[in-house]
Length: 211
Image (cartoon, rainbow, N blue to C red):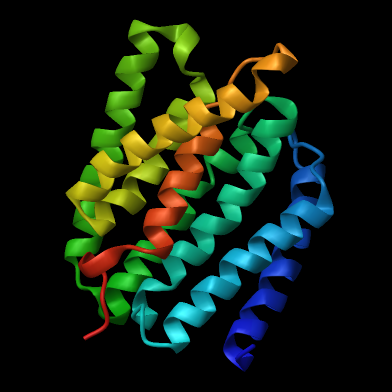
C-alpha cells in the first residue's frame, strides 16, 4: 500500500473515532459503533489519498470529500441505528462544507465552485423541502436539513451530479428497503442521499479533473 494511502487511512480511522466520541457527547447526539465508523472513514480517506497521489484527483478538490465523508459516515451510522439525523451534525455540515468549498476554490478550483455550490444547495434543498411538504411520510425533516449541504457539494461538481445523485439515492433507498423490510421499521432516506453524494464526490469524473 502506498505511503500516502496508508497515511490517509490512519488519519481517517483516527478522525472517525474522534467523531464518534464527539457525537456521543453532543446535546442530542447519538451512540454509534466505533469500529464501523473508524473503518468506513479510513477506507474512504484511503481511496481519496490513493486517487490524489496517483493523479486521478486534483489536490485542491481534496478538502471537500474529506469533510463530506467524515460527516456522511457519522450521519449514516446514526440514521441506520437510531432512525434520525441529528441537528448536531446536519447543521454544522453547512459551514464546514462552505469553508472547504472556499478553500478548494482558493487552492485552484476557481470561484465557480462556491457559486455552483450555493445554487446546488438552494435547488437540492428546495426540491426536498417540497417533497416533504407534499408527502411528509415519504421524507423526514432531517433529510431536508441534510439535502442543502449535500446539494452544495453536488453543485460544486456540476448540474449532472445533482440529477444523478437524486436518482442514485432513490435506488439505494429502495434497495435498503428491500433488504430490511422484514424488520418492520421505516426506511431511512439519509443513507442513500449520503452514499450517492459521497460516490460522486470521490469519483467526480471529468468535471473535477487534474490539469
